[in-house]
Length: 138
Length: 488
Image 1 (tube, helix red, strand yellow):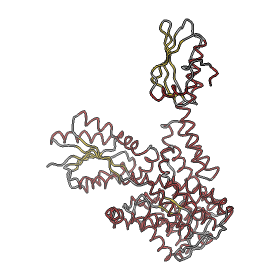
Image 2 (image 1 turned 60 degrees about the horizontal axis):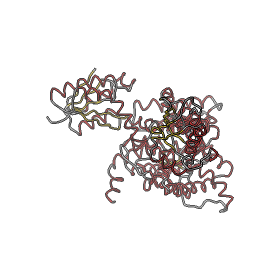
Image 3 (image 1 turned 135 degrees about the vertical axis):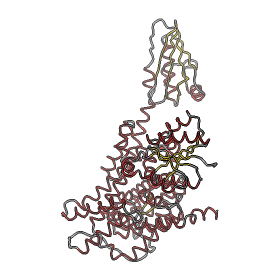
Image 4 (image 1 turned 90 degrees about the horizontal axis):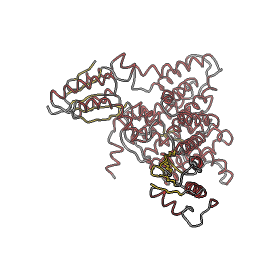
């Protein structure tokens, strides 16, 4: 069991609660956390239009994860941040399976309002298709 | 080299071919509709989309980006087509290509960083509004059935993707509405009423225009506007594809590629085109990553037209209008409205001025220039604010200057000082938080020093950074013998 814990985060309330659980897991099993932040394809146009170049964009996105990162720093859990591009569900699944993570921790809904409220679709898809145990945090 | 070529073309064959198919299907209605906006036969837009997509797949700098006939370009060429006809459009397209190729060689992509984001937001919003406005004559006040068809098309476009994601919903809408129109007698206008479809490959010819200065003076203004608009949208799209795929691209090569594509396109009877944000996003979303996706899109598009040409003329106009309304909704940057409260007011003003200029002049390039000039003025106004603070210690008055001292700020700067202070024998001015940029700045310092000297007060300057003090040494007169206020 040498893999990491993948924490899917979009900076939302649910993702923050997921971070708490991921921290518990990381401490219990002495694992590193990878914070995966997926930028939806549809967001790219908006973000490119509203930023001055790629550095500025990177910074703005990292800002979304600030409170998540703060939690991890406070609990002194070692972590890395991975910004991915694509459709949130499949992208997390692909990354998790490719990099053989040990656990995926994900909030039950994200910032993506309506869709998540009706279906909880991202966490549902992830739970169905990831090869490792998935912890969905309410 | 060979390795890179292989990687760019054949590293994602299945994904590229599939996404290319999807894009080809999504391109057909748009290419026809953009031709109608420009006032030319649908074939002109279809040939353009074929030529540009195929050529750019080889010479472009951003793999997986889709270039074809576009709304932005169609809107710029309307007047030329109306006043001078098709042959002049082909000539203008070739000239556009030549200009873009030249700009590409001059590495004009570097200048993109000087275009403020609020101008780019204004650009896409204006484009969306113009595309929508161009649809109005095709559906307002024609017949009730026209409204029904537009509404039904939009319903299919927006509802279908919730259930079926593989086929582009605009295409399904077009097919459905065409079938209904053919079998029902609704008396709707069709694409055939506005032009003809030829089921043949484009062929090489030289535009039938006199090769003289008069022709050049007719086509040059349009070609210049086209080349600027085309490069702007292409480079913006390239950045979006870069971000989506998390890869880099060669913007200079892309600029040159757009030029080459338009030159060839003009000789094969196409209208000038550029990269398309919407289609490129569809391509990447559908799995396209390499050059093969762009090539497939162009080639399949031509193949479908040759096979289906007879059906294409039967497409009812309201269905195309529906697709274009979708394009305009998709083009508009809706976040620019929600973010208005968060961003500086000047950014919003620049965006709105850009949009209004475009809507009035119908020329995207004019809007961009208006926006750039306005934001440059705002920027100058913003950085020309200088702050001067003072403190008194016995007989010495200490000033501290903060900000940029240059032509736009010197008037305020000079007025910040009290030249007849009571009981003061010495004045010091600390420049460590300031920068003197030009001869106006130096002149201002001179004026201040000499004014005090006239009143019998000695001035000591301190904290000048290297650039500022070397400017003073070179140009100032206050430190030279016999200095007078009239020096400047």
